[in-house]
Length: 475
Image (cartoon, rainbow, N blue to C red; front, side, top):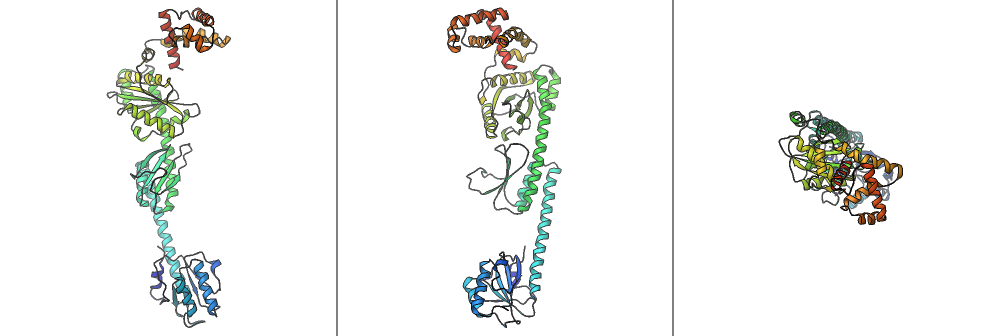
C-alpha cells in the first residue's frame, strides 16, 4: 500500500509537526509536490502532499488564496517548511486551512523536502512491485488451473478466490458456471461488473464479477485464458460430434449392429443397457453450422451429442422428456438460433436408438419449436428396419410423378398429398387447391398411369402414402 498521511507525519527522523486543527486521516499519499507558486492548482491532480516555504506568500490574502487553490485541486495536506523565509507557519494560512478542513504540518529546516518525497516515492515503488508480484502470481495460478487439467471450472474458482468475490460465466444466454447463488441477470440487486469474452462466435459470452473486487488488473488476463479455453472446447465438440455422428449414421443405417454396436456406443459414452432419450435439433440453413460447436445447456451437460445430416442429436439417459426438450428449445431461442426440437422415445439397445432417432426425426416434420414424441408411424418403423427396401419402393412410385411435375409443372405430387390427407375426397381437394373436380379426377388418373398405383384402390393408396412418408423422412 502507498504510505498514508498518518504514517508520513509520524515517520521517524523527519520530525514533522502537525499544525492547525484539521483532522488527519490515514488516506494514501499519491505524490509529493514542491511549489512556491501562488496558485499551483493547474499542476496538481489530487491526492498529493504540497510542500512550500511560503517564499512568495508575503501577505495574508496571498496565503489564503494559496490554501484555497491547493484545497480546490484535491491535495491531502500542506507541509510548510520553516527556517528559510518564515520561522513559523503563518496565521492566515492556518486559519484558512482550518476553515477548509485541510491538514497543515510543519517541516523543520533540518528536514529537506527531498526526504519527504523519497519516503513517499519508495512506498509507491514498493507498492507497485508488490502489485506486479501479485499479478504475476495470479497469472501463474490461473494458467496452472488450465494446464493441470482442472479446466474452465477450476480457472473460474481460482479467479473468484483471487478477486475475493463471486464470478459467473454466461454463454448463449445460459449460465455456464457461477460461484454464487445470486442471480446475475439484468435488474438484480447485486452489482456485477461485466466483461465480454471473445470467442469468434455469436454467443454473447460474458464474464460477470460481483462488486467490489480486488486485483482488477488480473481480469484482462483471465479474459484471454477463458477465451482460449472456450475456443478449445468448441473445437473438441466439433470433432467429437463428427465422430459420434458417423457412429449414429452407421447405427441408423443398420451397418452397425449387435455387440459391435454395443461396444462402439459404449466407447462414445452411450450405455445401451439404459433407456436413452433422443433429442434431435434442426436449424435453418444459416444457423445449421452453429450446431456442431454449440455447448449444451446445464441440464444436458452430461449428455452425449452428435451431428448427423446437419442436425444435432442428443442422447439423454435420464430426465423428463418434456422438461428437457422445453429447456433445450428455450436455450436455442435465447441463443438466437431459430430451430426445432424433435423428441424420440426412451429406448435401450442399438435398435431402440434407431427407433428413437426416426421418432424424433418424424416429430420435426410437425414444425413446432418443440415436438414431443408421438406414436411411431408405420413408415418410421419400416425405415428403422433396413431389411425393408422402402426407399427403393418409394422411388419407384414417386420418381415418374416428380419427373412429370418438373417437366410440365403439373403439380401431381401436391395433389396426391392433399388427396391422401383428406381421406380421398375429390371435393375437398378441389376446394383446397382451387381446382374443378374434373381437374382433380384427371390428375388422379395421370398419377395412376404414371406410377402404376391407383389412389382409389386401398392397397395402392397405402403404398403411395408410405412412399410420400418415406420421401419426407429422408428429405
